[in-house]
Each structure stands twice: as structure tokens, then as C-alpha cells.
Length: 249
Ligand SMILES: Cc1cc2nc3c(=O)[nH]c(=O)nc-3n(C[C@H](O)[C@H](O)[C@H](O)COP(=O)(O)O)c2cc1C
Image (tube, rainbow, N blue to C red; front, side, top):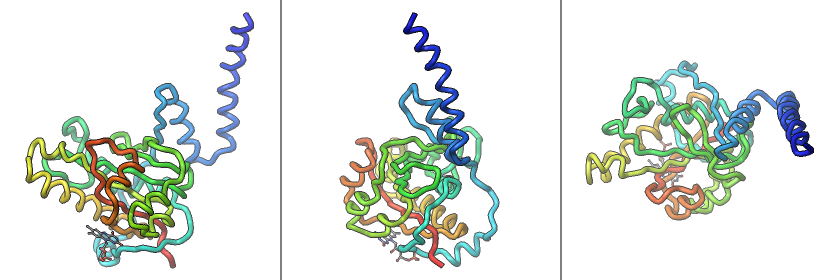
């Protein structure tokens, strides 16, 4: 009887608690809360990203002419909307035409096999707790891999390149080479996967430039350390770190 009563109180209290939490949170935080709540059973925290824009104010020509590798950023946060836009530009799904059941992405890929995985190492993104998140193009969302601010560790693993520590976030690329080599063999390993990476990385450069955000492609790091920080699986190899932060005036 007592147990039943406790359950009824608990059942009624949870929605009330969520309503209170909702009224004190910002709009972007609310989105996160919904997803955390609905996925708590599977222990997977999924954060739905805001819808990316498909029209901007800067032309491609202007972005191409202004693009540079930027290694110092304004000491301010990025928003979830900005991070969403950068990830979508990098590897988001741009066409829902079915291909292997996953749709086609913003970056081309040999055989549409999409060997790349993208992670967001977030330290100062408004509406997003510090942590490492895996970007899932299908559904345009983030999956929490690890909580906490990992920017310093990532910076150390990248030969102490300071922009990683001070940027509000970094996008880390890995590749599952087997996805491409199964079809293309050695040509896939020696050429196609890195070509895919180049296309996607340039998308980040151009999208960032158009948004007043700076980035720099970083290839110099200790592979094992980066893979460990990110919790990469054994079949993944880290390829790029791209810190992102607002341009200094
Ligand atoms: C494969 C690759 C690896 C790179 N690795 C680093 C790096 O570890 N650290 C860094 O500061 N810049 C790195 N860069 C950025 C280059 O230094 C930069 O692109 C080059 O100086 C030309 O400048 P720009 O990008 O502004 O045109 C890398 C670029 C590429 C393409």
C-alpha cells in the first residue's frame, strides 16, 4: 500500500518537476531536456540540433576569397545553432533521396560510403553542457560520448596547439577506413578516404567564414591519445581536429 502511494507521488511529481525546469531554462536548453528525458531508458543522451539554414548572407565567392586558417578566437561562446550549422555543412544530410538507407550528404564521398565520423568537443557552447558528442547526420543530432570539458587534454594530444584549448569547441574527424576499402581496396585507403575528408573539411572552412567564425585544419597530433580522449572504437582512426570560434574584430 505504502509502496503504491510512493509510486503515485513519484509519478505525479516527475511531470511537475519537468514543468518547473522548463520554465527556468532557455529555448535551446529546453530542446536538450526533452531529448534527455525521452531517452533516459536506453541511457543514451541524444541532443536534437536546431534545423540548419540553407540560405546565408555571404556568397560562395566571398567565402572563398576570405577563407583563412584562423588560430585565435574571440573569448565568447558559440551557440547551439552555430554548431548545428557547422556540423550540417561538414557532413549533414542534404538530400533525403535514399542511398544505403541514409540519404546523401553535403560532402561528396566515394561510392557514397561515408567513412567519416565527426565528434564535437564542446567546452563553451551555449545550451550544450561541456562534453564530447558524436554527430549523427541522420536525424541531425548529437549523442553524448563523455561529459566534461576535454579541451585541455585534446590540446595536449595535439602537440599543445593552444587554439584547441581556447576555442569554444573543436570538431574532430575520424574515419572507419573499412567502409571504403571493402569496396575499393588499397585505393580506398590511400586516396578516397582522405579525399572525402578534404571535401568535408573545406565545407567547414567555408561555412565558418560565412558565419564570422574562424577554424584551422589540424593534422599534427598523437593518434592514440586523440582516439583515447574521444573514446573512438578500434576500427576508427582520427584524422583532423578543427577548432571553431568567433573571429576577433
Ligand atoms: C592536412 C593539413 C594539416 C594541417 N595541420 C595543421 C596543424 O597541425 N597546425 C596548424 O596550425 N595548421 C595546420 N594546417 C593548416 C595549414 O597550415 C594552412 O592551411 C596553411 O598554412 C595555408 O594557410 P590558409 O589555410 O590560411 O590558406 C593544416 C592544413 C592541412 C591541409
